[in-house]
Length: 92
Image (tube, rainbow, N blue to C red; front, side, top):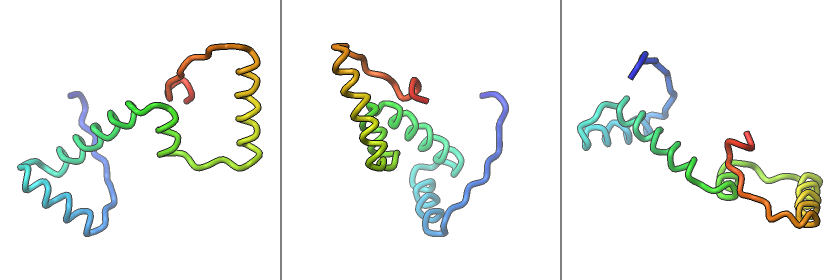
């Protein structure tokens, strides 16, 4: 696995209780449950198409920004380009 790193997280008492109860039910350590759950969350999030990702993770744009996006879309349509789907990694 390589070098092990230690990280601190902040949880409410209620969140901690829920996670600790789950750990007991599945017979896993707190760290293992948190690590596995986080990696599963990342995997599922990265499977989302761009529109779904943006909807779930980004704030709405103001009217001026929206107009700018619409102008870009119109320019792309005018180019008669079929376009292609891009990944989130390409955007970042």
